[in-house]
Image (tube, rainbow over all chains, first blue to last red; front, side, top):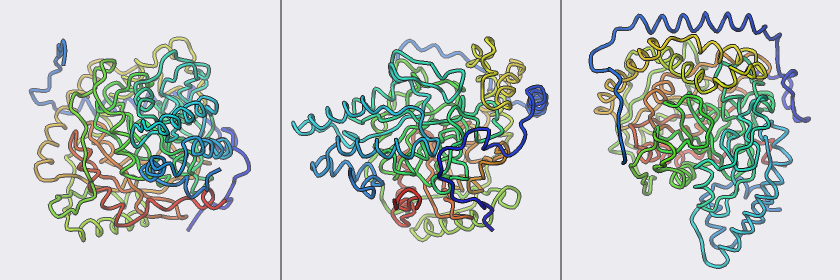
Length: 64
Length: 467
C-alpha cells in the first residue's frame, strides 16, 4: 500500500525543520553513536587476515 | 517558449534539431531557464541560477552554429552542474552552510571541457552538504533543504546528487553532472527515474571538484538516455595534468544498440527478503527477462565474500576527515545542517593510520578476486536500489546500498543505472549494469539495448510534464 497520505505537495519548498519527522539528537549523542559505529567497523577490519602482496607502494611517475 | 514536450527530449534529439536549425540554443536556454526558475526552488533542486551568463553563452552558441561552426552534440545544450564543481566567480557551496559564500577564481576541468563542447551552464544544482559524507540522518541535510522527488515530492530524491537527478527528471535542464563516492549518482538516478553513469575511477578529472575521498570520488553525467550519457562522457573524459588520478586511455564508443547474443551477464544475488521490496524485485526480474530474450546469457553470480561496507567506511571516513580538516579545525563543521553529519565527519579523525592502511590493503585483495569474475562475465547486473525512494519526513540514514554499488565504488568500476519500471506509489526503480574498468561502452551496450527495448526512460513525472 502507498503510505504517502499528503501527496502531492507543491506549495513552495519545505524547509529543513519541517521536513524532519522527528527530534534531532544532540551533537554529543550523535558523536557517541558515530564513534561507537566506527569502532565496530574498525574492529571488523582488524579481524581480517591479509595475504602477502598487498603492501602499499609509492609510484614515482615523472610523466605519462 | 518551446513546448515542454521538447524539453524532455534527449540531448541527442535536441542536438539534431539544433544542428538543423529547427530550434535555436537561445530559445532552448530561455525555455529551460524558465522551468528551472519556476520549479527548481520548489523541488529544492537548485542553488544558483546563472541566467545572464547562460543567455550570453546561448547567444554565442547560436552565432557559431549559424556561421557553420558546429562543435558537436552538446553545442547549445543547457545543463546544470552539482554545486561541488568550481565555477569562476559564481558561488560553489558544496551544499553546506559553512561554505555558502565560497567562490573560486577558476573553473573545474569538467566545466571547462563542457564549455569547449559548447554546452551552456544554466545553474548550480543542489546536493547533500559535503555530499553526505558524515552519515546524514535526514534528507534535509543540505543548504537548500531536502531534495524532493519530482515523481512524488513527499519522497526523497536520494543523494548526494539530489538536484542533478531531479532537475533532469523534471525537465529543468538538458543534462547534469553529478558525483559519486558511494552511490551518489546511481541511487538518485534510480529514485528519480533518470539515467546515471558512474565512469571508471580516473576517467573524468576531479580538478576543481570538492574532495570527499581522493581514492574514490568520480564525476559523471545524469541524463534522459544512455546515448546522452555517452555524449557527455565523451566531452568530459580524458587525462588532466591537474588530477593525477586521471587515465591516459582514450574513451571511445561506437553504436551501442547492438544485439546481446554474445553477452555473458552475471546477475548479482541481492538480499531482497532482508532489505528489499517485492515490487522492485518483480521489476528487476522482468528486466532480466528482456535481456535473456535478447539472447544474452544471464546466470546468477554471488559477489566474492568481502567486508564491503566496513572497508569503504574506513577509507571514506579517514580521507574525508583529512580533506575537511580545515572545517573541523575551525569549528565550522558545527554549522552543518545535520547534527549526525557534524559528528560523523569529526569521528573520522579518530581512525588510526594502521586501520586505514589495512582497509586499503584489503581493497587490493578484492581487485584480484574481481579479476576472476571478469573471466566469466562481461558485465554484472542488479537492481540499483532494493527499494523505491523513501519519505522525506523520516530518517533516511538506514538506506541500504547494494553490494554491487559497494564493489563498484571500491574498485572504481564503471556503472550505469537506467529506469526499469515502477514500484510502490508509482515510484521509479532502476537497473544497474556494471563492467570491468574502462568498459563504459560495454555497459552502455547492454543498457541501451534494454532502454530501446522497453522505453521506460521516456516516462516523465506527471506533475512536471503535463503542465
